[in-house]
Length: 103
Length: 170
Image (cartoon, rainbow over the protein chains, first blue to last red):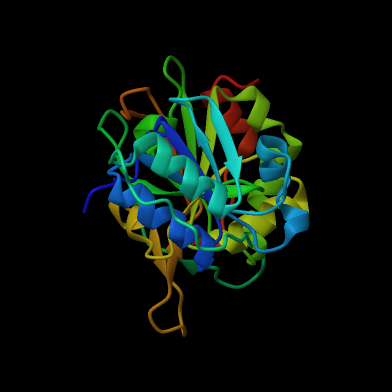
């Protein structure tokens, strides 16, 4: 196991996610692969109850990550995957071309 | 008081004053999201933290406690206040949202935290279901118990005025 969940509330990456959301799990896999420390925040299934995501990222969809190391806040799994690959992946890592999505 | 015998929960066996309470990590639930937090990370750095155990969400007893604490504005008056109950994060989050409560509550369906603090209550007639008694612990920043109150009857509510005096919330 690479990535570690933090119970301190001070992990550099905050990860807004929905239980059993495949787009979120895709991001989770990459965070683990790159051994990044992140704090998961599970949100409600109903978009109307996602004010916190709207405030943070301007959208009501998840996944959303907030990376304090780089000051980046990003939504949509394809964008997030691309960002993580560029920022934390090995040089020359193959770009992910699979279609993104969100819940 | 009713003219019949109220169910006795047995003597309180909560963590005693002057001893250190157990640290733990569980999902801390607000009306918006839930995330793993540890008690030691959540307590006030230089003040008193009030840790409130209640029966599970949906029970009138749990609701009465949080309604009372909300009316008395403990959220703003206490240095820090945080709850513990045996409900799932979804149940806790909707409860906080529907009642517009400002509190954050640790979700512990296993009820292991209540066990560790000596305040569990096995629900009679419901197999495998345990929840916290109503209990209030005042903790110092290093988790030393300053004072506490644990229900010994079913139901029994704290004397809130008395607690406020003890906790300097007057």
